[in-house]
Length: 470
Image (cartoon, rainbow, N blue to C red):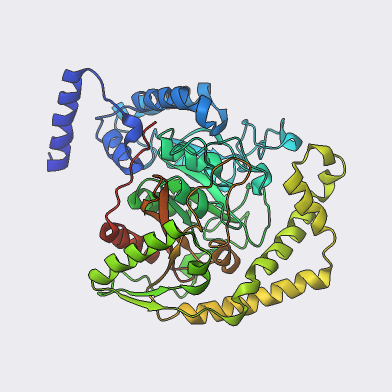
């Protein structure tokens, strides 16, 4: 018997004496996986704990569109019986996962939080759902999103302060993980829809390199800008999900087959790290709480021996926002063309405005924006080439008060625009006790190394991820 198995055996006996396992919803994905695979914890007990948490918090937080209760209970019972026989489907065996309501789920509503799709039930699973199920995950339900993953806010509230936005568009996915209503969830990012809500809610959010994860079965906002993203409460959990979800997909022909790319993974972290810090744009637009936080983070990195070098951005950097909006508007109009006239009044005002503005964009204007994009991508790739990673604040402010807006994505759009991998990790709190995060950007295809560097950064910063007091 290994030491770990023996420790878990003692833990199980201790819990039986107590009669129950308390606060299972607080445990991370990786912790839950280890307990289930050692038969210390049953999937049914885990689901019970999470459902009780949802029952308590959901009326206030409103993070869910759909809870697939009957199917979740059935799957948890089935996974429990399999675990008792030491038969495991995969690393996520019996663990409930939340899914942003833009991913197709067979026999479960996929509404994109819109009246337009309020009764839509797909007959197949999105690629990501298929991969999660194959790894043993239980698809607990669908989380709230800004309508069609744009800017019309979801009803979701920030678990750290219910008067503040959780961010968007992956509002429910971030809030659910932050509040302990699921240990991990799927989201997406076209501008800042993963990084921003993760930072606002005090958790980890990863946006991988463009098309490292297949978008098949994900309702698009903008095909060439959309990324699959996800939310967790530990870097280890993020790495687990990344490994599960990254693979070549025949149904998404642009998905990267990383094995066919001349890619050399960096197994060792250089010491000291050479960090490129983008000040100017990212400092000038930030609120004082954010500036003070990033200054403290930089000081910790420097004290650890890392080299912090201020990075100059390309001259064309300031036009990213305009080019991004042109591309997004045109591609959104293309996708919604068949429905916008028939269901015009059912669309929210912001997504409706985006689509209608997209019809006014000429082919020449769209192609010019894509040409500008190609040039900026080349310039940014060249600018960051000599650094281990790039550092910026995750957001311009802590989570804004009110639910009328999901906050600004201007610190996140450049990396969606360029398709570079980005991750946010908690780095402190504002004066009013709201979470703050730092954004780490890696090189193209270098997602695995970015995760290693993020783990190092998290240890240096020393901010522990915890659930809010609710």
